[in-house]
Amino acid sequence: MSFVFSTHWLQRSTALLITIALITASMQLANQYERDLSLSLILGALFGTLLQRSKFCFFCISRDFIEQRNSHGLLGLITALAIGLVGYTTIYGAILPVAAEGRFPPDAHIGPVSWVLAFAALIFGIGMSLSGSCISAHLYRLGEGAFASVFALIGVLLGFIAGFQSWNILYLGFIQDAPVIWLPHTLGYGGALLVQLSVLAFIAVLLMKYHRAITSHRVPNPTIEHGSFFTALFVNRWPTYVGGILIGFVATIAYFRIAPLGVTAELGSIARTTGSWLEAIPARLEGLDSFSGCATAVKETLLSVNGVFVIGLVLASFASALWSGQFAPERPSLQKIIRHFIGGLLMGWASMTALGCTVGTLLSGIMAGALSGWIFAALCFIGLWLTLLLRQKISWLQ
Image (tube, rainbow, N blue to C red; front, side):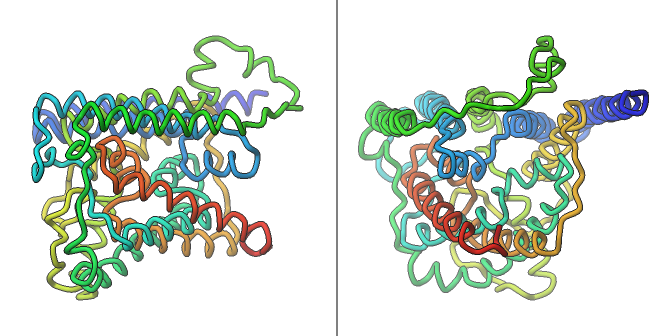
């Protein structure tokens, strides 16, 4: 008992130290660098905490519905999208009162629509299913001690380099003339919001219709499940819809003050810098820097807005996992390492080609009213679903 107590005390003390370090770093960034860096660190920490507390993983919530008909997670995702849609539309009305053809809201993740986007989304879904998490979830699970995620993220970096190598051919052949479709151009702000909320409501109705209630046979732990409000807030997992509500607000604040949510810009920049240094990617990437999305660039400074966001995400999820007792270091098998690496490789290529992942292209894209976000969501889910079916038949992939 004393050993368990001392372990819990050590974990929570470490969590407090990490929290203090994040607050101190935020204040230092605000005083010595830019306020955007400071706020980005705070928002990244909030985002990482919400991901960890509510287990907001696109793969996990999709798998729960496909395999168990448990729709709670996907309903949480729909909640986040609905709140983000309302928040983004409100901001658009202030910064761009008229959604005139040819004009786009600044920095919004609105990408070109082509078969390349659809194929990249399909590949991302396959990679996500193979590695067992999306990129953002690998980052927060890294904070939980999932060391296999390290190999998935290495795969992501190499996948980005592969994406840069194939970009010019795809861009010049298929993406250059692809339409960039922003729904408010056609439907206006009110119409686009109404149509998209109606689609989300329709999907929610279907999810509730096919939801299968699961009766848990676990023996309740009175210390955990019937504890105080403090225990419910900092120890127990949150319902996904709670995470979805708060993520919707965080996404709105992030877009209003800094940039849309995204986790691959820094990873892509690291890959682009490394690839350029090794002369492994083209010196000129045609048209890439003209698109909105999780933009990548050769790193010229150590700190970037998205970089400190990712750092805040990982550290805050680590602190959250330590405090709640959910930090569980694992020693992955060789089979799992290989599967995670291959999955990461596919996600990296797809993220570069689709200009973002399930956060940047799907979450921020749909909130922005981009057709590219909806297409990415549909094809990503199909790729994930087909790969899950395959994994059930091939033991090596399980």
